[in-house]
Image (tube, rainbow, N blue to C red; front, side):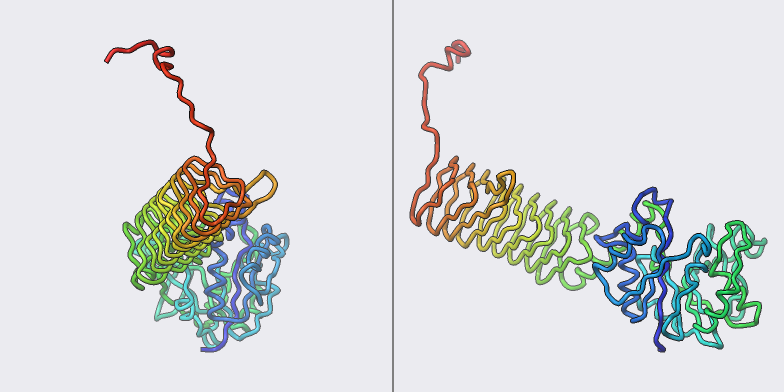
Length: 435
C-alpha cells in the first residue's frame, strides 16, 4: 500500500464529559484516549498531525511524554469551526490522507489500513457500521458498492430510516481532492460550522466514487460521556487480559482484575480475583493473590498477598509477602514478611524474616531515609526500625523493640521498657469478682 498521512482531530471541549479535563485526556487502562489513537497511527505512518484547540498546551505536553515526530496544529476555532475547519491549513506529506477522531481509543491499525486505497479515481474511502439498529446515527445510503448519500436521522425519509448502515466518522482522502475541495466548504448551516462530511456530498455530486468500508463497531466506538468511557475501558481491559491469558497467564475471575497498558506479565504467573496492576509493573512467574495492588514494580518468583500493596519502585524476588503488608521503594530478596508490616525505602537480603507489625520508620517529617537489612535477620513482631539504619547479617531483634542504632552481626537487639507487675491491682480496681 502507498504511504499514508494521518490527521487526528482532538480539538473539541467534550462538554458531555462534565469535566474540566479535555476529553481526549481522560484515561482508559492508565493512558489518555488520544494516546491510543496516536499509538495505532504510528504503526501506519511517519506523518501524523494532531489538531488541537481546547487546552491545547496541556494536550500537547501530555502526548509529547510518549511520542516524538508528531506535528501539532491549533485550530482557528473562531473563524473555522467544525471538523472541516479542523483540517484546513494542514499540508500532508503523502498522497493519501486518513482523518481520525481522537476520542476513539479502541481503533486498531490493522483495520484502519483497510481504508488506504483512496486515489484520484476513488477520492474518498469512508468507514461504515453495519448495525442491527442504527437509531441515533446518520445513515449511509449505498448503491452498487458506492456511497450515494449521507443523511442525518432527522432528515431521513420513510425508506432511509430503515437503513442500518451508519457513518463511523473516519475517512481516507486523495490528498489532491482534499486540498482542492476544503476551500469550497460552506458554513451555511444551523451550527455555522464547516463539516468534513460535506466533502462526501461534493464528490458524489461530481460523479466521483466514494467507497464504503464496513468496520467493526467495537473498534470504532466513540467516547462522549463518562458512561461511554467506562464501556470503552471494559472492552480495552478484556483485550489486555485476553492477550495475557493466551500467553499462559492464569486469571481467577478476570472481570474483577484491572491491568494497565504498560504492565508486563511473564512465565507461569497467577492473578487471583480483585488484583490491580498499575503503571510499569512487571510480574515474572509469580502468584498475586486476592485484592492485592502492585504499582510500577517488579515481582519475580514470589507470592504477594492476599490484600498486600506493593508501591512504586520496588523489586520483590523469591519472597513471600503476606496479607496487609505494604512495600514501598524497596528491594527484597528471599524475604518472608507474612502480615501487617510496612517496609519503605529498604533493602532486605535473603533468609530474613519480618515479624507481624514491623515498620521501617523512614520519614522524619522532612527527609526520607533508608533501612538496610542483611541476611538471616530475624525481626520479632511489633518492631520499629528507625532509619537511617543498617542491620548486618545474622541478627535477632526481639519483639516490641525500637531500633535506632546499628547493631553488630550476631547480636540480639532488645529495646523494651522493663515489665512491672503490681500484685492485687485487678481486685482493687474492679472489685473482687466471683468465679
